Image (cartoon, rainbow, N blue to C red; front, side):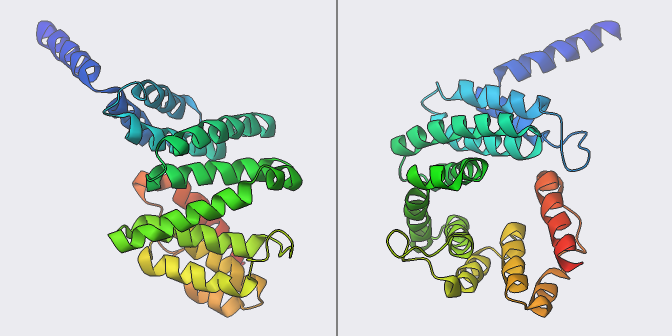
Length: 255
């Protein structure tokens, strides 16, 4: 019995060793919400995922997929496993720098474009708004949204929905500066969020953003109508912390 157990253990170790770096990164990423508390988690598993995704970059067959998964992992680490503001800023500066290089390398990959834009937005939120504006963050993000929205004609509804979502958020939060951002139109916010939800109605973040917009406009009834059915559902197991945070924000919005 002991011999059989040792053999099984060795086989498991061997099988794990045979997995590619990308697969090992995926295995740790799947465990990212393990032992979470108060919508935060220890960084051990997500750091392991980042380690293996970084190693996978060296494999030309895995590089492109490893890039967007690495950028996604940076987002998770910063938002759910990095409570310190200075550490968060340092992380998103790294993600911004790497993401810009990756996106230049693969300018037609919508997943890389999207997760780069997410990390870029999180970096912009962590610094002075004037610093973010001078860095060209707004214009770069706008160009990414155009690229993502264009994927709709190729049947990529998820990427297109992400593009409309980002554009809706941009119109919602950015000031309309005639000289620099005369394209900002507050009346377009609802249109873009609804376009996003038409393509991907299950996206909790877009539902939350639209509800926030309704509340800002003084239309609490529309916000309640939109969110009441959603807040009754539990977080998805595979997106537990991400869904949990959106659901927490939704409940607070309706209070």
